[in-house]
Image: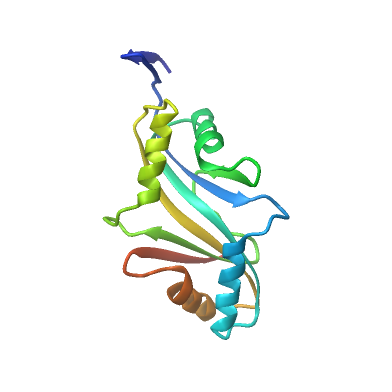
Length: 170
């Protein structure tokens, strides 16, 4: 992979690729949003919910490699004190748990993605990147698919602006 200069910015030529980044709280730290969602699920009458975890999702497409992506994660996406990240090529389920992924529908403004793209440019990375953001909800408990569907449409996703998918982790 060669390098070339444009003005005073040095860009690396990288192949087009797509990665999925999960951002999550480090083990043992309290997640207030997950706690509130669990309470909302219980208020729906689904008392079998045991735990809720939330991961912020970033789909990053463009001229990028693993090293550059890790830099973006460390310098832009996470709070190093309280959060960590994992990088995947495609979405993964959680063994023995329900997973709901929520993404903005095509054409809906994703302001977090726009801000992220600007922050990446602000740290000097000028590569052509397209960012999409979403949430992954991991639901643990004795839940049926109908329960998870109900939770998804009533609590996790606004179906006017979000697409969602439900997976059972095998």
